[in-house]
Figure: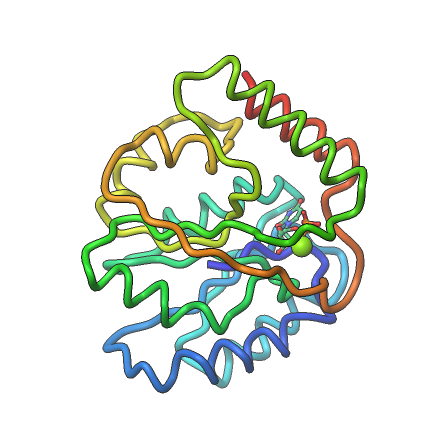
Length: 214
Ligand code: UDP
Ligand code: MG
């Protein structure tokens, strides 16, 4: 499941990389679900074009921009498989780790989440993120780790539990640790965003943080 907002420069390359990585795994059934979160560039037409020649590619198209978390949730709502992997469209989440995630799942994990090990984040992002997790952790019984990303594999039973939340102000990375189940992590070095700029403006980040806290 790939939440996509104005990622016209990334979709084609991501698609090719995903196919390269996933095809050799010979999964019985597979879908690549792009959730277009109200893009106003060419993202949707690129996705549609890919979908016409690849039956594994599905898409959901939002009527406007609802935000990354709701795009992710819509993807989970529509995924109909035993396991679902979510990742960003900008190639920051290394596609090469997908086989390892699947292996860990096959070995019994219900959630395989990823933790960023990069220490070279811009000062502002690093400091604000640390501060945010300190505040959240002082308020909550569930301990959240800094650097946990929305790059993860969820087993269908975890998705069922997650979708029981009728919360619309979603902070998925906070809900998942509270669900229980067998959760294991993998570490990753984020790549540089391939094309375009971050789609998390300062105001979106602030809103996301407040949503997480409340
Ligand atoms: N995204 C989205 N809707 C939004 C903002 C972002 O679907 O309103 C998607 C975006 O296209 C990307 C992912 O969410 O696939 C993460 O966004 P981004 O890479 O801009 O965040 P950053 O890595 O800078 O925190
Ligand atoms: Mg990114």
